[in-house]
Length: 191
Ligand code: IMP
Ligand code: MG
Image 1 (cartoon, helix red, strand yellow):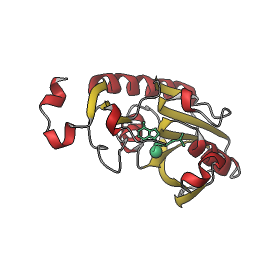
Image 2: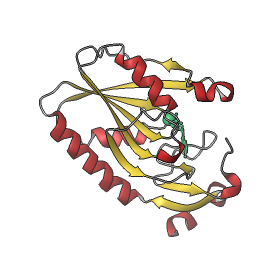
Image 3: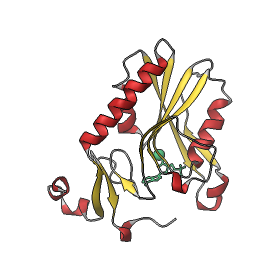
Image 4: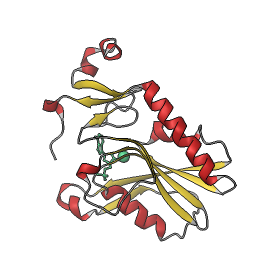
């Protein structure tokens, strides 16, 4: 809690509590990086950072993967509320690299309903990668709509909390907090 007390009040007003500290995130991401290093040794690995939320996670994760790898970026937007359960999304920024025949890991900040990753997985599968895995820092299984979407690597499982920080946003803010925290009930976006 001290870390929040030291921050400016207009920033911290909606924040309830720190869920994962910088230290906890660092340890977890190190573990994930070690596991991926073991699993992919000697393979042609491409890590896909899903913008913008996965910015810090991917940056920290790849620095804990001890083997050659490539990094690329992708950005996806859902078509909005009306089509939410259909999972219709569109790519707003595509990969620059060709993934055919390569081992691909998609790094996401959070897996919630699964709509985003279900779409991404289907799009990327059509490009014939040698393998395609999902690596999510956070997993919120209680809200899953796409039950087939399961992360291969997970940092933390969380209940149905709205969380911000370490890349995760609320109305485009709070991404820059170095830790992950929950929001007070009255600020949680209703969906
Ligand atoms: P999904 O398509 O519902 O699985 O959601 C994935 C995207 O929703 C994530 O990449 C986030 O951008 C956003 N999201 C889901 N839950 C949260 C949250 O608790 N805080 C901030 N963003 C979230
Ligand atoms: Mg995201």
